[in-house]
Length: 143
Image 1 (cartoon, rainbow, N blue to C red):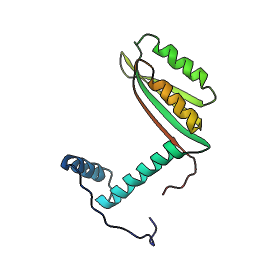
Image 2: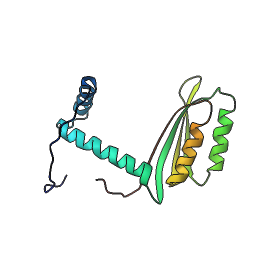
Image 3: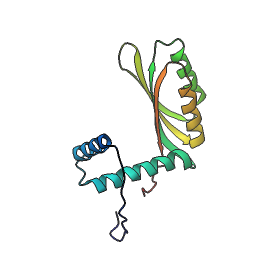
């Protein structure tokens, strides 16, 4: 935050439970005050939107997958996708969460469109329970 920045006061209507949870998280992170926490949350929201929807050029990131490895063919399909996107995937990690569930983390680097295409192909697989992906441009200044 720059000292010469102009601040604007505004009001927000929220469900009480959401505000209580927000205040708990703010306190647990040691953030001094709700305004500072809201600024940080807004900045994160803007950066995520920008990187996910407007990013250009090479991006880096991760795709985290939770899947049921007992679903017929799922592991073969994941392996096939990793080979199909060999130039996009820098590294992968496989973690056994329990007897049925696994987590796979793919470190990716490439064009946003290609990362989104891979992400969407993973989402379409039967047996995939959850997919979370994050991409960012290295060296980009935060708003």
